[in-house]
Image (cartoon, rainbow, N blue to C red; front, side):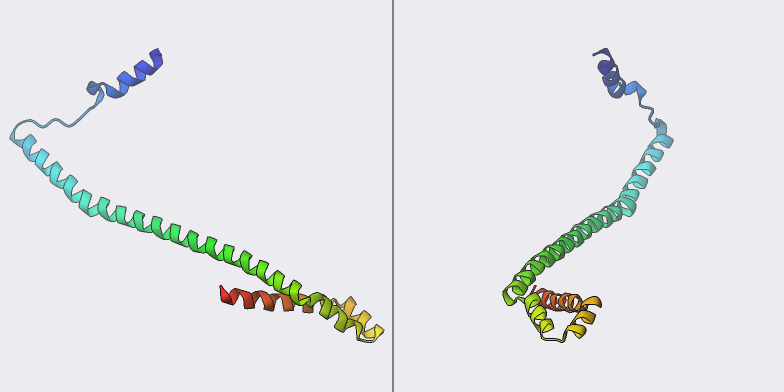
Length: 134
């Protein structure tokens, strides 16, 4: 309690504030000069700085919103593309086409993982097609 009271007195006691004193005609001229300097500094430094900070804040939020929208649309597109691939049974059609090949050719293509590559390429084309709608 005493500690809080001491801090309150320390912050609110006006004798601890050391201000420039203005006395006489020279003090009045200095006071007016300080006023003009502060006024000019406000319009020359503070106002442009405020607009720069406000513009950068708004642009940052807009860019983050756009990035989040694009990420969400990619997730949606991938979900739709997976649904399309399941409906068309792309993997099973590639597997059935592979079964029509001779055994030695099929074994070589499976070892080279050609069918997996074809499956990935077809999935990529379907996903790209769906992304074009968004």
